Length: 288
Image: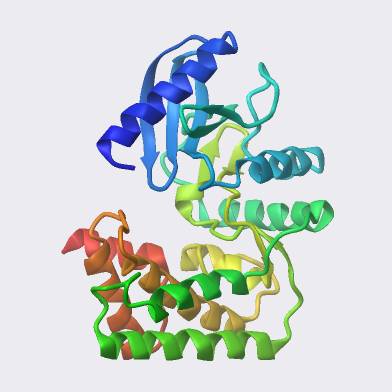
C-alpha cells in the first residue's frame, strides 16, 4: 500500500478495535504489501488489513478456526472479539493474537516439523479451495497481456509464457497426490513464538502436491521434510521462480525493487538448474 492508503488502513484498524472495546491508540506496521500487518497497542492485537474485494479474509478466518480445532500450528484469532471480518472505510480488518518473536531464528528442523503438522491438519480440515494451477493461470494472463505488463520485453514475454506452460504440463504429468496447501509458507509467513512456529496468511491456500509448498521454503527446511519427491520439488521451485517473475512485471507492482527482481528471476530461468529458493535470491539482491 502507498503512504496514503497505509494511513487510512491504520485508522480503519484502530477504529474497528476501539469500537470492540480494544484500546488501540498506537499502531506499528509489521509488513506492508497488498495487505497491511499491524501491531495495535496497548491492546496488543495483530491486525491484518486489506482493501475490501481484494482479499479473502473470511476464508482465512474460517480456515484458521478449523485448523485450530484440529491442532494445526496457526496464529489464533483474537479471543476477546467475535472471530469475523470487520469493515471500515473500504477496508477489511481481521484481528488475531499477537505473538512476539521468541527466538531470533527458527531452526530448519522445527520449521519442517511445523509445516508437516500444518499439512496434516489441512488434510483433516480439507475445505474447498482453488487448485495451484489457478496461480499459474494468473501469471500466464499477466505475461500474455502487454497492457498488463508493458515493461516486459517481447523476447522475455515469449520465453516466460513458454516456460510457464511447459512447467504446468510437466507437474500435471507427474500425477502427484494433491491436498490443501498453505500456498506460500515462506519465512515471512511463519512466526517463531513461545508456542513454537505458527503460520499466518492463508490467502493463497490452494490444492496441490506438498512439493509446491516446499518450493517456497529455504532448502535447509525442505531437506528436513520426509517423503518429498526431489524431481517434483525441482519443477515446483522452477515454477515458483517463473510465477514470481511474472508478478514482478505486472503494471502497478509495488514489491521493493520489483523490476530488478524480475530481471534476476528471468536470468535464473535461462541459466538453468540448480534452481535456487526465493530466500536465496532475495539475499543475493540485498547484498548487491
